[in-house]
Length: 440
Image (tube, rainbow, N blue to C red):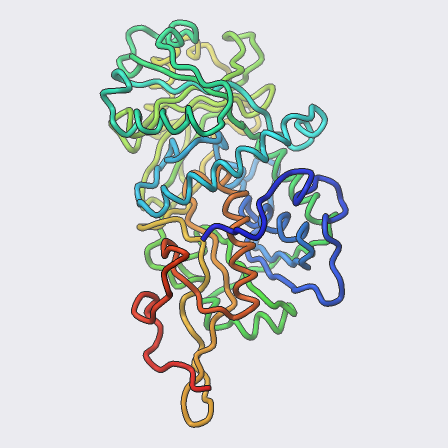
């Protein structure tokens, strides 16, 4: 469901300054967000500027040492028009919504990056992104359709030119590059951005609590709302959906990125992103993904291993060695690259679902005795999880829809499943609610 009540615009409905756009009052609804990753923090930002009071509970927050970091920090964070490069969504509902979500995010990231000071503080930059294809794009129907949508979407700097292969120094012997196009896209230093976002929402009034919540949120909804004095609960837990939403369709896709020094000494400094997408490469699991992280670090990827939930990669793991070899064959100067001495290998688990990204209200109803029957009370839980490898790309768009869902939930309107059109009624059979309805 698109939030028609408010379109996000930086400087209008969204502000980078500490004061919220709409100051909360003593009557402002209180929102409990569970999850401290990019989805949780950006959702908090949107709600705070709308005048809501926000508490965020997370088992851990962004960290910046040599220990394992949050998935939101591990992400390549290259904005892409759907589907994502690493671990794409193929569900039709996700694709339809993701196009809107991603363009909402694009415009806001573009506005953030337009200020040099703000770009530096937030870690958000706009830069050329090159996509390469193993055949003329017209011969790859999905990519041809996607390219036409990109050309008409408002994405800046689009040009199609097979000459990009030679201009970017791609090896002529690498068979995966025959055609190419380029456009300007957000590229995000996730360590910088996560610290900036956390600081921003705290200044706007969010209360951050470190705590792990276990069990299905629906079964403890009333106690959690009482404990945190919350009118609404937002589940932004990523992999936590399997436990906190009782969603057995959730699964991880393991990935890893090699971090090399990008200072221009070992190879020409890379100031653009280079990628061969999963569908274009003919492999869903091993692709080419080269993205500047910041002024000094370049990421080499990428891989996607579904249903692998253990973070035990090393630089000698065969799939990691193949990943580096693939990037070196694609761009031979990388053979001289030095590793990041502090954090040479980043690895994480992308939070996927078997169907679609879930941005919808809880569809189960609480059953309560009422006048000899049962009253079916709608839940006030709103879910935003299962973003896979596209959390940054979809973040602001999803947060905007969460805002609309919260407005519905506060009125206890009967929830609609994601994908149900606005002009369709949410019938009992469609949302699998209990047969007994409210007796008024």
